[in-house]
Amino acid sequence: MIWQQLQSLAGSYPLALRGLGMTVVLSLISLVLGTLLGFGLGILRTGGNRLIGSAIGAWIDLIRGTPFLVQIFLIFFILPEFGVELDAFTAGVIALTNLAACFICEIVAAGIRSVPTGQVEAALASGLSRWQRLRQVVLPQAMRIVLPPLVGQYVLLIKDSSVVSAIGLTDLTRVGWLVVQRVPNGLLVFFLVGVGYFMVCYPLIMLARRLERRMGAVHGEVQL
Amino acid sequence: MIEFRGVNKWFGALNVLKDITLSVEPREVVVVCGPSGSGKSTLIRCINGLEAIKDGDLLVDSQRLGDPATNMTQLRTEIGFVFQSFNLYPHKTALENVTLAPIHVRKIPRAEAEKAGRELLAKVGLADKVNAYPAQLSGGQQQRVAIARSLGMRPKIMLFDEPTSALDPEMISEVLDVMVAVAEEGMTMMVVTHEMGFARKVAQRVVFMDAGAIVESGNPNEFFSHPKTDRSRAFLSKILRH
Image 1: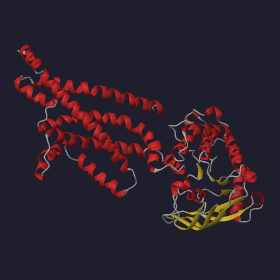
Image 2 (image 1 turned 90 degrees about the vertical axis):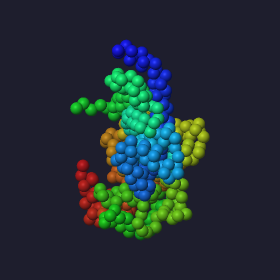
Image 3 (image 1 turned 180 degrees about the vertical axis):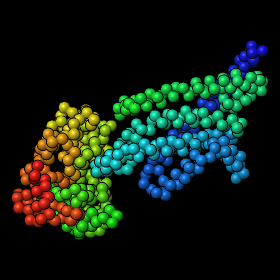
Image 4 (image 1 turned 45 degrees about the vertical axis):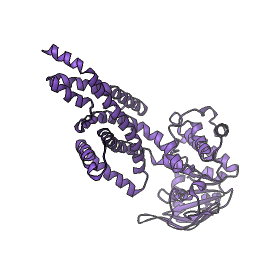
């Protein structure tokens, strides 16, 4: 019987590939957009304008304090009530981009805050404009702090993308649900789904670890 | 060149600058000294707008600070500032530290800025450290790069905020030598320091501050040999004792 199931699974190969492709494409677009947006928000959040800073803070609290599934439902099912019709893919990209931007904003803001005040003062004293101070002095130093947790966050977001299957997008997780109806072996099917995610995430996990080790080498490792 | 007229500043309820009136002429070298917390760092940080003043007038190069017509970023390019803790950019080499502002603010072509930067680093005795990162340099070397960085903008005024206080004793003279050379070229300078040798050598005037106010000011030799007030006498006896 297991042999039959394996054969049937092999037949689902194209579907699985499509699901994997959807997961990768959705994650890639959302992570690129979310990174750009997250950096912009992180810079604004630390930019000194109280009002903008707390508005961004409030939005981030809201997004971090609600389940991603609920956010997707709100975008996909509630927005059409107000006349905004979105296809599932667009809704998925918007939801995941927003989630990514919120987490990345906090990582970037923490990185910027870690740059000593003296650095900004030195840049100010040389007459560098706001953008030049950011571009030449603050961001390069913040990036060393930002990079390892940023890559780690990418891994979490790729896994979070599985939630889009709830609005009917045929990503890797939804392919699992579809296949398991034909091949009634949940353990095997979702084991393979897990392998799919792992293949995408593992290189990033390795990258994050390397970046962290490089940071440690720069700052001198502390033995506990 | 620099003129304080009845300047006051508060940190919360603390009156850190009390009715400061002081004028520094072009090419003049003024040393500011006084006990810790007397407001001397705050005084020179006000000059390039790192601290804002509360009331009174502060004119720098005939421009009034806090005036909407004064372009602060522009004015800062005319004022070099050397920090106690150097504040070199750690991700940039000595040469890049020196050329950053000339290239991006003054819009000087890179090749030209690098040539000038090398000359400046040679002038402060660091011709062989052009490509070194700050972490590879000693404190004294870092501070000399910081001075070269400020000079790279060809400022009209140089401000020094305790430039040798964070240095090991054997490195202090290499930094002071550079500062003496800058002073002898006719730079307008305000220097917060307790280095009396430096003050005697190049300063036209010593300003003694205590509790946010200027208590005494005068010729260095006179001030160090015959301080007029009890507070300056008490201060000098403490820094002279060791």
